[in-house]
Length: 390
Ligand SMILES: Cc1c2[nH]c(c1CCC(=O)O)Cc1[nH]c(c(CCC(=O)O)c1C)Cc1[nH]c(c(CCC(=O)O)c1C)Cc1[nH]c(c(C)c1CCC(=O)O)C2
Image (tube, rainbow, N blue to C red; front, side):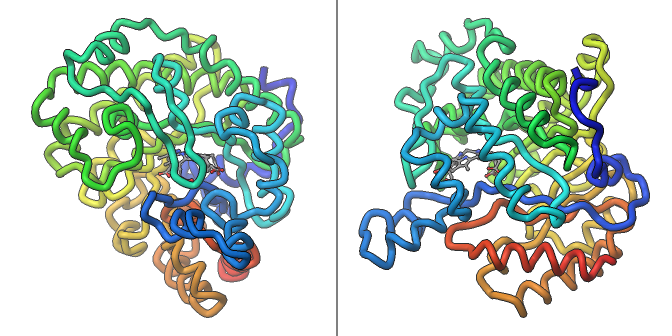
């Protein structure tokens, strides 16, 4: 499969992920930012005026006007299911920031796994994901149905593999393509909460009241993740990232029981599965948002790269990692609101903390681009990284 694509012209990300010395640190960012129903972005949407209609162009994940144009009024998951649209959206930041960023991430979502497991997931415009029938308890019928279903990971998610192959073809080797999935813990949260949450009442009920059933579900998701990522690699993904976006809701002890073993299951079994399929291993990244307490464990969890949010001090995190993994991150996305002086100051501190990024650092934000960010400020962020890591 891989032979059919043009050779990679920029392999900085892959070399840095493997811990090799590099000329400068690679850079990439994720489009999806924070958005919850009580955010300013959602409130603006509920009360539009002429000015706020204009401002909506800069909502989370939609900071690029060309995103709106290509998406038009299509449903979010419809875009994910169309390889043509998904590949177009994937390439947009690469075209806009040509020469400034070093990787593309496939346009998709972590919630395609719950869909493949038989759950209905809708993306409510400006509000986020919604499951009409979340898992209420181990005996509610839904849970049993989900657990009993054998998921055909190849057939159910075929549209993702097609989008990846088409994107690789369209990229013509300009930069590597990142594949991804949601971590078992984070997917469990969505499946039981029915959407985003602030209090995590259902998720906590599940882990504290039904630990065994929770672990059975986490194990099932982990197995699907392995197969799903292997098939993404077969289709052309050159690095894979596991997003544990809600890791920070757990205590260190419950992280050790309900998240880490399943993250480890993925890192231990993906290389084996790739080998069975006759494929070379690819670098693997884990991003456990909010789990600052687990950095040391994550450095030993079998991943090549550990993504950090902005709660970490760069120099301190680099010291803890101590060359065991490559660190990815971790600028506070909020600094992009501060304009040029704030961006320069953040980049300076980060570059210094990560020792100029000649080894062991992939430059990124500590999460995705947030609402109302000016694309020109993001560009300035990239330019400052280049200037200060020359
Ligand atoms: C938790 C999570 C989800 N999805 C994802 C995560 C993990 C990352 C994180 O911690 O945020 C991952 C994701 N989602 C998306 C990507 C593709 C890469 C990219 O866009 O750069 C990736 C890597 C597209 C998307 N996924 C979503 C958008 C916005 C869709 C739109 O309204 O147009 C995009 C571009 C929607 C989505 N999808 C999800 C939420 C909570 C939302 C609503 C929040 C928001 O609107 O920013 C679930």
